[in-house]
Length: 524
Ligand code: PEP
Ligand code: MG
Image (cartoon, rainbow, N blue to C red; front, side, top):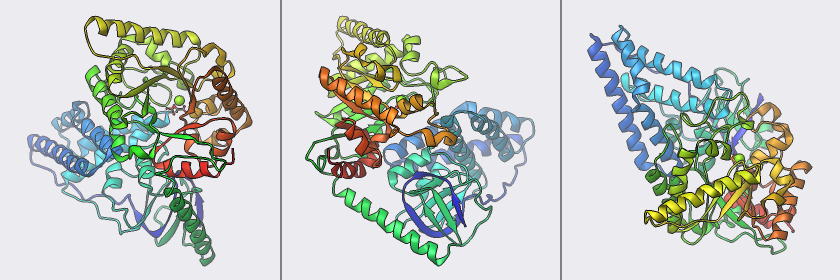
């Protein structure tokens, strides 16, 4: 039986199925509300210390996610309603389950992929505390198993030993979830959206996370075909690794710069700077998590990345909140957030918040080769206003005698208006094509809606023509043009992007090797 889903992390796994949705053992109630409260607090404390231990062994993105979990667990807004419910007679487990259930339902009901993906984090937090309450540890999956269920908790992922293979097959899930991000960076095959997957399948299964499918109770012919695809994938990956430490060049000898995209400053801990040409995009909206970061926090985050990169460029993008990346206390509720107050529009509307980031960037600029870019620019006026704020903050820092430097200021090309009429932007320091948004706006197909996924292709001639015209404009005016959307790391899109005239791509760190290998195959 073959069931189709959506690939979230490419690869192949063959092994026994392991059910993630086994129910935990029961909690034994206490004699008084005071004891129930103490039990809940102790369980939260236990969950926090378990996460702290996991952080010690985790790197970059994983540590960031676990820190996010700890912050949630330590937030009184989460435990408050549970403690109140204990006061009115509920046992600790039911009170916690109910309080978290309400939060989870709120996230699940969101029409935005980003928020729905965070529901998995909340379920994880709920279950960690429930397990601590009932002194229950999870049954370990056999090595090499395919873990299946509705969704998988990030901590479950981090505690699983993937050294002998294995994979993840989810009925629900999301390609935008934290676990999907982790699976991509660790190379663990993962398929989401297998809605029709049987309830309690058993036995061996074949997970094809290159195309997005699982085969349960496979026939000998299916096993044979699967093994062929799997070894061809492994061969392509193995070959790609030999490219990792080399500068990228095409078959015709044309050099191509390949930089990396990062989100958390700790992401750089897992990357060898010698394998890339710098950071082409640091998304800063993830620093704007549940609370708005102050100037010092931002300064330290930017400084860390700049010092890691040395002389290589680091392009930091000012906060692109809104759209599928809401930030509580900053973004606004909108019926059509992708076309609303997001990116530079929001920063210019909330200048007191924007100015904090600008000061942090100006101060950090002395620690390396910083470039700053603005997201979602549509008009030259927006660029002029953002640049004027940099000039104002620079003057204020100079008056106060604070060391700083004005970095080159560039823009993202992701709103079609800019790609169609780039001549209004002849004064910017550089362009960076945001193909994720450019594609969704050109094709009128939301990037987080699987139902219109078939329209969402950077290789559509309309999108490629716009990219090519921006590349030509940049060459004529001497303005560097790069691309930092996900298409830059997609081996299937790379030939078309280079043919469109691009020579500078920025990709997810896990895609560096495959991207360089794909570049070597292009004959431009
Ligand atoms: C893009 O739109 O291509 C891009 C890189 O920005 P983000 O994915 O953060 O919107
Ligand atoms: Mg974008």
